[in-house]
Picture 1 (cartoon, rainbow, N blue to C red):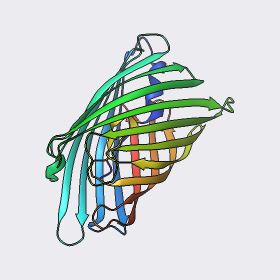
Picture 2 (picture 1 turned 90 degrees about the vertical axis):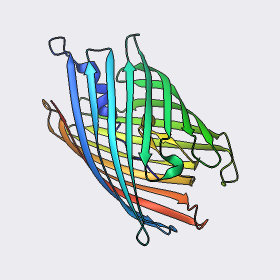
Picture 3 (picture 1 turned 45 degrees about the vertical axis):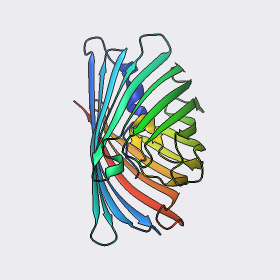
Picture 4 (picture 1 turned 120 degrees about the vertical axis):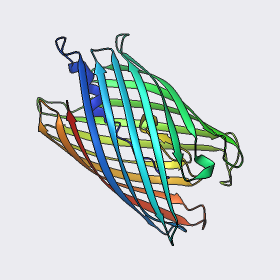
Length: 286
């Protein structure tokens, strides 16, 4: 199951614009998404909703938190609900460095993953408005899964800005995923590798972004740990695109429309399947 995330890079970068006379910066981003599945053995469609909170204090401290609710309809009369809580603390006290620590907890109708959790830590070096390089480590615990399982993930990332002008800027973000399962869970392997690339154009008040990934993933943690896939499906690739418009620079109010397509091997039928998600996000400061 794909967990949704609102880990927005634009908000994360805005901590550097905090003013001394107003140390706190708080943003909220509620969202809704509809997802439908193609060629799956049981899943039909789903609804996702939640809220992401960004709480920055001064130039050195940033806390991100998110609540997600998922409702999935299966073919027939069955359904599934899940609640997710995520939080991460980011520290910028050391010049040109960001250190982050966080966790994610899941509870819902799916007994093997009810109560599953993951924790992470990471270090990133950055040159503001130029480039950044970092690595994150994730540990997931699925004690009620059969067999009981842990997931280890290492995710290095490199991003840089290019073709910059007074009003526009392009950005490239490249992320590599190495996922290692403690046990084989019916997928024929315990080690998974993939590569993700995203290109973003900032042309205030617009932002356009397109990206995709190739390789193999399962039980992946994405978007800094806020997005978690917690079913034993082998994902084989995906693409996504965003359009964002800022209504008001002072309040940072903005709307984002996102489309995501994901391909995976259906665990029930063993055949290739896919999902398409349409998402709308509205963010504001207060």
